[in-house]
Image (tube, rainbow, N blue to C red):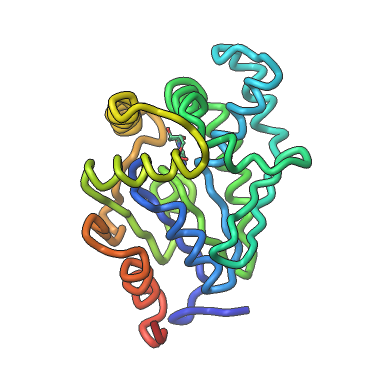
Length: 232
Ligand code: DC
């Protein structure tokens, strides 16, 4: 079992939409060889499953049932091979990134308290003695408040919009720049003002502004924070 600075590597990565947190968190998990979980993907998977089953976004009972039975598996090809997020035998990674799923997740699913509780519990159950890299909004504040390493990624609105634009196009989703900017503004607002699990940088989180950093530079900073002896 690997330990860093004498501690089990429980590492949380939070930050706003398109701040690069998912890629950085996953890459960190690969380099350190510890399991990874994306809570955003879990909320998105609840939305996807509900849409497939034609469940209304306001049917809380059905949504909670889906969240409680959700079984996601995060499997990685080695970087840069894309990660797979397996749900009911299918890789849903691309599907859950669609603008419609982003919208429904932010406006409906992430606001249902019992869905939140189910995802908080499922995320905590992923922590073993090997440690965990957990990525998503309330990982540092609600799910693992005592995590020894907390990173809060930030990035200018412009850099985030640019990143989102490239990601969506790569994934084959066609969107106009205007709708992308409108969507991001709305999501930022909803994420900040959510009554539970709002986007919030914890006072003990290490703030990383990566607006002007290459991914590899940001990773180097994070790795050195976890393991000051790391050769990066
Ligand atoms: O990180 P993301 O963009 O994949 O998250 C999708 C949505 O889910 C986003 O609107 C915020 C919400 N979310 C949340 O409320 N709590 C989390 N721990 C993770 C995501």
